[in-house]
Length: 70
Image (cartoon, rainbow, N blue to C red):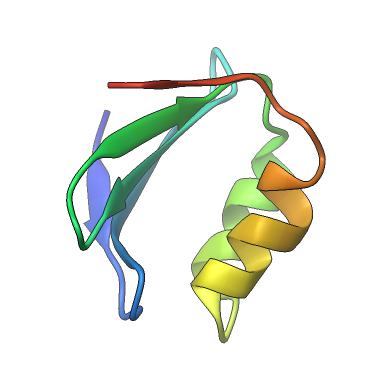
């Protein structure tokens, strides 16, 4: 999965697998997580969001997508 570096105070890079709908988030303070079944629209919205941390919390974490550490 290609990881794209992002300008964020919380996230360091974001990646997405279009076939499986898996979103990978690398955090600045360490750790990476995969979120499963995430629609491509949410990934694209995250990439373009002004605040990536707020977008992640509002549309990914609060939506209840299954996740696991990488």
